[in-house]
Structures are given as structure tokens and as C-alpha cells.
Amino acid sequence: MKCTSRIALGAAFAALLATATPALADLKIGLAAEPYPPFASQDATGKWVGWEVDFAEALCAEVKEKCEIVATAWDGIIPALTSKQIDVIVASMLVTEKRKEVIDFSQFYYDTPPAIIGAKNGDMDASPDHMKGKTLGVQVSTGHERYATKYLVPSGVELKTYSTQDEANNDLAAGRLDYVLANSSALYDFLDTDQGKGCCELKSIVDKPKDDPGIYGEGVGAGVRKEDTALRDKLNAAITAMAKTGKFDEITAKYPQLVGKMTLPKAN
Image (tube, rainbow, N blue to C red; front, side, top):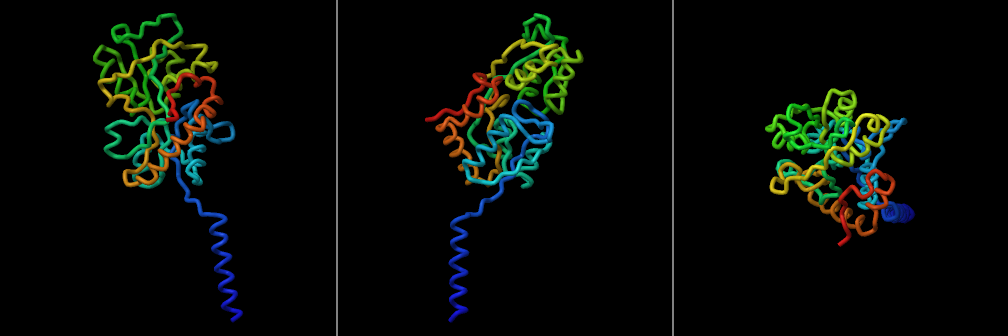
């Protein structure tokens, strides 16, 4: 009788613990290993910081999941997702039809126009004809590479690709490039650095071709495996909730260089 009572008591206690401290599944958030300030970069201690890191942390809190950031090389981040090394991509990845053939995406969580920067010389003409014979740097496997290949290279612009945005910016500052095409928010951050202030200036904001959505897609979304529909729906609900509570504005306020320069989800 006493043994039965102990068993019953133990079972009740275990049930109470399970109710009081529900198990939280871990999500591995894939972040591009290459620095991409102000969205993601490592501080002096090696900790990942930036707008997108803050967004990922807020997203995990909203879906009530424990999350681990896993730095993954940009050119291998989709294979890492499909092979289940990571669960979600949060890496300024544009939602495009080609990528949607392989993975699925949440609704967009930010969008910014592309921009062209160049040497600080007062020449603000960044038209394709004016750039003929000049060298343009872009990060590989991005909408910027697709745009330059289709709309600038045919006009005689020489294209040079880089593994990271920092590499392209450094070559521009060193005079090894004439122009760089990238996300305007990332370029504003570079132009605000001592290096950027000394060398370069904004030449042009680029209009995304509306009749060619395959270039720049539908904004930036969180990538998930196609079969993870429940996770995708949870992320969508979380993004909607964050928009309603003003969380996006709260995060962005920490990065003055981004305020007013991003399109963010709006509360319905």
C-alpha cells in the first residue's frame, strides 16, 4: 500500500513539474558567418550582435523556443537548412521564386532598396552608360549580383564578385573598385564608419525592377524547410504579433542608421 502511494505521489509530482516547466524545443538559427553590419557581426568578445540578431532573439521569445545561433557560410546556408544542421535561416535572405523551389519562407520581416556607392568625387551619375568600363563589386549569390548581371553588365560594366560584403567595401576604399552595389542599409552603415567617411559616398538608390521579381524577390524572410509548415506558421504569427506590439520599431531604434530606411511589417 505504501509503495503504491509513493508511486502515485511520484507520478503526481512529475506531472506537476511538467506543467510548471514545459519543455522547450531548441531551434538552431542559421546566421551567415560573414559579417554584415548593422544586421549581424561579432563584437570584440565574439558575440553576435546587430539588428537581425536582435530580431532573431525577439522572434524566439515570441514563439517561446530556446534558440541557438549557428554561424554558417553564406554559400552553404540553404544546404545546412535542408540537411537539418539548422532549423531557420535568419540572414537577410531575399525571398525569391528560385529559392522557394527548394525551401519555404516566413512573411517578410524587412525590406530595403539597393544602392550604389563609389569614390567620394562628387560625380553622382550612376547610370549604366556612365558606369561603362568601370568595375562594380557585389556579394556573390545575391539579388545584387543578379541585378548587375542582367542590367549593368550588358552596358559594359565590369562585374567582380566577393564572398563577403566587407571584402567588396574594403576594395572600394582601397581604390580597387569604382562602385559597390548592395543593400542600402548595409551601405549606410559602412559610409558611417571612419573608413567609409574617408573614401566613399552614396551615388544612387536603385529602383527594384517591378516587372522582374526574380531579381530582388519579395523582401527578406526567414527560411524554413518545406515540410516544416507548422514552424513557418508559428513564425508568421510571431512576426505579426511583433508588428502589433511595436517590437520592430523598438529594435530599429537601437540602430539610428536604419531608422526611416527600412520597410517593416505593419500591424493590420
